[in-house]
Image 1 (cartoon, rainbow, N blue to C red):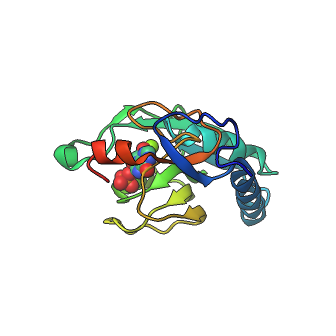
Image 2 (cartoon, rainbow, N blue to C red; image 1 turned 120 degrees about the horizontal axis):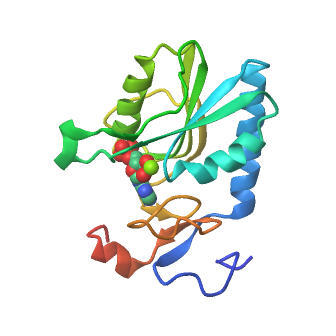
Amino acid sequence: MSRFPRSQDAPPEVGGVFLTEPAIRARVAELGARIADDYRLREIVLVTVLRGGVFFLADLCRAIDGPLRLDFIAITPYTEARAGGVRITKDLDEDIEGKHVLIVEDIIDTGLTLNYLVGVLRARGPASLEIAVLLDRDQRRIADLPIAYRGFQMPDTFVVGYGLDLSGRLRNLPYVGTLAEDVLEGLGLG
Ligand code: IMP
Ligand code: MG
């Protein structure tokens, strides 16, 4: 297989493929089947964090054979500079009290973003609250959260594509890619 499934000319920022489209598809199908099995016929509210989680959500929800609803939330990303100031920029549209809520996120790194979200949602009294992430990078974990559904464990590298962005770009790559050396160096990650 070629290094770049869609084209020989991957965007110049991309260094290689970390997860191919078929690998993602196969794993998402497994997760969807497990979720359907775990919740049986109880309705799930999939709460997705805008914007990166939307791509994973779109595939995951179609892999779940069972009743579900979708809702979306957006928050300012957690950074140390903004430590006390994480806030909701777009709230859920529906009440989750008494509902089975499953948070769908693209990646968990420090865990601080999800930790904030879990605190906010738990206070609203859902019947249950679980987390599904496509990628789990645990080298920098600060907030230790139980992850019920995990796509892939990953090494300490920044990735783009399938929803994950580099300053807002490259979300539309159908695979998950690593960054080219010069981009990593530019970001001080090289
Ligand atoms: P955390 O609060 O450190 O767990 O950060 C999680 C958030 O940071 C995710 O929702 C992503 O938006 C972003 N993020 C973390 N790692 C990456 C990456 O490798 N590529 C793109 N975005 C990332
Ligand atoms: Mg995100």
